[in-house]
Length: 458
Image (tube, rainbow, N blue to C red; front, side):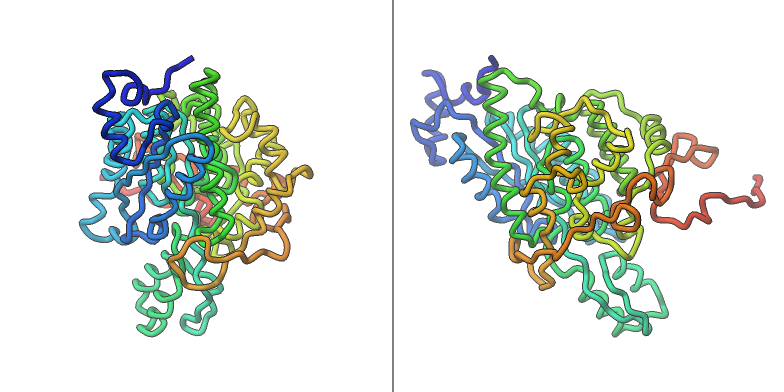
């Protein structure tokens, strides 16, 4: 049975100095010997995906305490790629991933924490924390801040745009036919709430992938930041981390460790999800880095193989103006996409997320199309946007009148009605990209899949 890592600083005569300092943080005699759970928060007022996270660590900490653990929170940096884009600020974005990974590792190891809850959300923060979790390999739960609501309808040059996101503001600014007044309307409407940008961009893609990797709870990738239902995810994350820490340290159950949960099979399932949902091309960069941290031999060749065998089942903004993350949620979220892939025989079965004994039981309980979904699943995926500009989390309890279970023409399709027989991401190779390149096929017209033209010979 592995000993609590924190015993180094909480148990024995030689730990008196460390205990004195622990006491100064509020710990008491009763706390020594309990698992210390590090809560890595990433709150900042600079980033809409993180502006609402100031107090959510307290929700997790309260749940940890009630479950029998001791919670201690710290914060990481968080860079907004959208604000950093287009100037020298973007030079700091990808390196920030490594700083985040290192800072989580440093805080956890320096203070001998036994377990970790990662409160992430935006582009480089979830990948950075994922790298740290796989590097540390201690019990870990991810719970992100949640997606932003889609922007409200505007009229541009006489054309009604029913939904908006950040990209619409960027493209409108570059379109000389869009007048200043129309541009201002787009700008004011594109990003109405806190949360990660409302489409299937890098942030939401990565938060969805933590579900497929098995390191977060169902609904983590799609439950809106403004939804009261998201508060329950933070509470359950606090309860779950103490449970899996107990299973590891008391029961010697190594299956709950990140490298065993996020196994090679889980990485393949996550990549299958990625190409099925038309995720961000940046996910390839982050998945390969995470696999390296986990010491898993997972390469661009594996991604190429998976992308050729898995169909594209969803097209969400920016791939389509029709659907946003709130619509993915209404259609059953990530469990629904995984359920369709599973029914098509495209998932590895030998995986178990931290919250369920097996993939089979997970999907039976949480896939709303399975016919056996729990009441909790049905309730969760009815969570709808509030339609009010706000930076406050958990500010709406709106419900969808019905769920989207249309597998032929809904937000999430089945294999028989797939957009394309191959995935929404593909690997290209050739003299222009001898080491490989990534193309988001879900975001381009199929007429561009094949091109012939005169070669330019130097």
